[in-house]
Amino acid sequence: MSAAVAAVGLAFTIAAILVTVAVVGLFVKLLLKLLLLPLLLVKWLVMTVVMLVVGPILFVVGVILAVVFGLVMALPLLPLLAVAALVWLIVRPRPAVA
Image 1: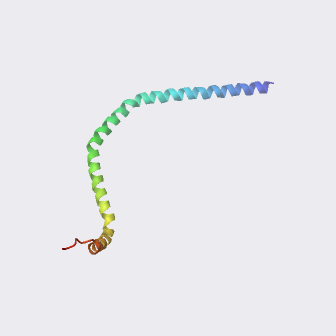
Image 2: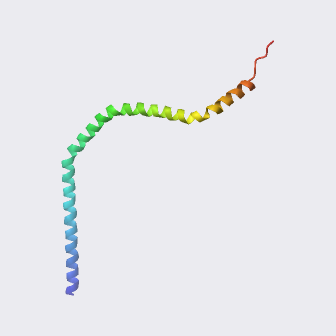
């Protein structure tokens, strides 16, 4: 009987320790978040200003890269385009001369 009482006492002790560790952990986490919140807000403000400056530059660079990439991909199709133009010039209907 005393072994069962000892096991129950040990289980309650372990449960009390786990609850205490969880409560202390939550308190430390809340305290840390409250201390770091001003730094997080400053980070957001700095990132907003940086993106207002860098964003348009990245947009222009992206548009230029897209145009260059499109031209590079279309370059191998130029001979096919030339052949298609020749075929169109030969096959196109000509107006009747009266």
